[in-house]
Length: 340
Image (cartoon, rainbow, N blue to C red; front, side, top):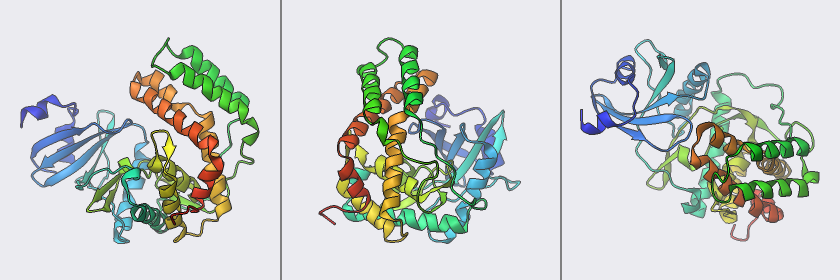
C-alpha cells in the first residue's frame, strides 16, 4: 500500500469490507471529500475500482431495499451503478455497528446545472421523468393510496424556532449569520398569509429518487453516466421532486437560472403530464418549506461544521431573490420562457 493509503480516514473495517464483498487485494484508495452526511471512498482492487460508502444517516434495511431496485432500473436502460453483493448475497455489510455498501465505480464528473446547455437541461428533465416511470415498475414496495401528508409549518412555530436558534448560536459564529436570521424572521412575518393550504400536495405521486442533484449525477461526454446516492428513495409527489431538483440544480449564487429551469421542467412535462397548477403548488410548498426551515443551523450547532453556516447564507440569498420574483419563477416552472 502507498503512504496515501495509511494517511486517509478510511476506517479500520476496510479489510473486513473488501473480504465481505470479495473485492480482492486493495491497490489504492482515496477518500472523497464531497458530501456532508456519509463518508465515501474510491477503492482500487484486484477486481477493479469501486465506490465504498459508510452509511451513517439511513436505516440499513431501507438501504438494502433501495439498492435492490438498481438492477431493474439498469435493465430499463437508465444510467445507474451496479451494486455489489457480499459473498452471502447481502447488499450491505455491517461491522462494528457501521454499515457499508459497494458500487461499481463509474468515471465522470459532477457538472453544476448552470453549466449545462439548454438542451442538456431539457434532457435532464426527460431523464428524471423516465426515472419516475421506471421506479413505478421496480419500486421497493407498494404505492400507498395517497401521497404522504406534508403539513406546512405555521408562522408562530417557525418564528419561535428562529428565536430559539438566535439564543443558541454562539456570538458571531460567522459573519452575516445573525443578520440573515433576523431577515428571515422579518420575511416570514411579511408573507405569513402565503402559507400553503391543506396537508396533501396536488398532482400525481410515486416513487422518487429524493436527491436528484448535480453532486449525485456523473456526466461523461455531455451525458449523464450515472445517477448516484439512492439513500433517499421514497414516495413523494412528482412535482415536489421536480421543483426541488430545479432549485438545487439551477439556483446558484443567490439567483435562479430561469431559462434552464424552464428547459428542465418542459423536458419533464414532455414525458409525464404534470399539470402546471400542480407544479405551481409544489413550487409554493417548497418556497414555504425553505422559508420556515433552519436545518442548516441545526447541523451547524450539532456538528460544529462551518459549511452548514455557509449553506444557510447561500440559501437565504436565493430565498430572498425567489420571493421578490415569485411570478417569474412560477412561469419558469411552467416551462414558459422566451427562449423556449
